[in-house]
Amino acid sequence: MKLLRLLGPIALMALLLLATGCERKVVYESKESSALTSCFTCHGDADSRLIQAEGEYDNSVHASGNNVDYTNRRSCGRCHSDNGFLDYLATGADKAPYDHPAAIHCFTCHAPHTSGSLALRTTAAVTLANGDTFDHGEGNLCASCHQARMGANAIDTDDYEITSNRWGPHHSMQADILNGSNCYEIEGYTYEKSTHATQVPNACIGCHMANPQVHDGYKIGGHSWNMIDEETGSDLSSVCTGCHTTAEDYNYDNIQTDVVAMIDTLREQLVDFGVLAFSQGEYLPNVPTDDTLTIADKNVAGTLFNYLMIEGDRSEGVHNPAYVRSVLANSIAYMNSVMIGKRRYGPIASH
Ligand code: HEC
Ligand code: HEC
Ligand code: HEC
Ligand code: HEC
Ligand code: HEC
Ligand code: HEC
Image 1 (cartoon, rainbow, N blue to C red):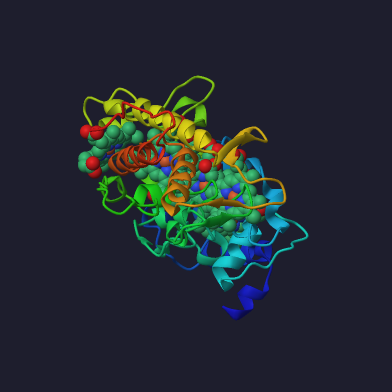
Image 2: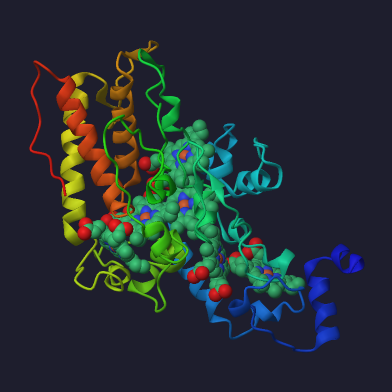
């Protein structure tokens, strides 16, 4: 075996062909890590699964390489590149800069030429920034990157200081929201949680990769990870129907309409209060240039954090309907209570 590992893959292929003939073994179904017995277990002339995965992947945002240029900034690469993720998995450290930063691709999540199977590189449980555990099967792979970069529990004092308009959870909080974790909870208020994380098999994967039959020419589901084809509007709401028989689209029980309306209300309150402002094409913490934004009341800072969490999640409540509804309703109610003498907002959609 030592000798084999020293040889290049092509020499290895020739050697294995001699040794094993045309033996084929279906590894897709077993997903078990097995010895690399034959290249043709995956690269045979009839292996449509790889072709399908490639076709779908080409339509994904992962394949786009958007933002891969951030890789060589320390602390960004572990999620924004193949190189960074693999080094982070192996060592727990950020090894940037790289000469050839690469987008997320097949070998970021699979290591077929090492393991001889299409098993995932990691399915280890993930500790979120606030200390909560995310442990939902193969969805743990996604949570390794799609997690907030800041814990709400860091907001622990009044006169809370914010020194950058990039303050907050980052764009990657989907695992936190799905888990019902890491929004700022105000003392004395009640919070509810939905159970999609445990109900849907393998969490993220059960929705975003659900696609037994190819839909919409590789544009949604499977390795495209898209829930919606922006061009045609076609979606994967058949996933929802499996559990919610009357769902016609993602807006089941008006979740998305209600959540978008509540996000709008909270945004207006935070702008009115002076802690959120429109700049560089988006709403960001209102930090004066080269200065500090000091928020007297830590609960207002927490509410600002919640706005960034729920707006950034982008599922408009679907990831965790009950949690998102209660966090938004409580945040809006709290802002109303402190905006004495200012315009009050309501009515608040609640269930
Ligand atoms: C367990 C499945 C599996 C086995 C076994 C396997 N491969 Fe692969 N191989 C893959 C996958 C998945 C890809 C990525 C496909 C793609 O690039 O779209 C790949 C890609 C490749 C590529 C293209 C490299 C690239 O960067 O895209 C080569 C060359 C290759 N394999 C050679 C081999 C050889 C030689 C063997 C036998 C020693 C082998 N493979 C065994 C799954 C496998
Ligand atoms: C913990 C993983 C992680 C780290 C670390 C990380 N990001 Fe991200 N980032 C993501 C994920 C996941 C997304 C995509 C989320 C989405 O599309 O909803 C993203 C999205 C982005 C976007 C695109 C936003 C958009 O709307 O298109 C930018 C820009 C970005 N990150 C910059 C950075 C920079 C700069 C750093 C380092 C200072 C960094 N990221 C560190 C995970 C991370
Ligand atoms: C972001 C992570 C990720 C990337 C990138 C990725 N995959 Fe996958 N792949 C997965 C996950 C997760 C599954 C399991 C899906 C499931 O259980 O339905 C999977 C399953 C597969 C399967 C089916 C395995 C089986 O047992 O049925 C094939 C084939 C496959 N991937 C090939 C590829 C190829 C080829 C590429 C590159 C074009 C690729 N993957 C890129 C995460 C990834
Ligand atoms: C190595 C880190 C990493 C892993 C693992 C990962 N992602 Fe991503 N994902 C990203 C980054 C970074 C982006 C944003 C790409 C960009 O805009 O630069 C992204 C983008 C996406 C998008 C597109 C968002 C949009 O803008 O429309 C979806 C959907 C997504 N990921 C789902 C998943 C799922 C589901 C899994 C698990 C199977 C997964 N991701 C695994 C890092 C990762
Ligand atoms: C595997 C089963 C399953 C799938 C798939 C599923 N859900 Fe759910 N969902 C549940 C269960 C169980 C509840 C009720 C308990 C709870 O709140 O967690 C629920 C609750 C909800 C709620 C809140 C219910 C209410 O009355 O307000 C909404 C909204 C929702 N789901 C939307 C969706 C959407 C949209 C999809 C598809 C993207 C989806 N669900 C996919 C199981 C599922
Ligand atoms: C219950 C099904 C379900 C689960 C589970 C789920 N998602 Fe989603 N996700 C959705 C839906 C539906 C949307 C919103 C699609 C729309 O309306 O644009 C969405 C939106 C997103 C987006 C925004 C980009 C986009 O495609 O609109 C990202 C990124 C994302 N999800 C990642 C994840 C990750 C990572 C996980 C696991 C931590 C996950 N999702 C779990 C259903 C799900």
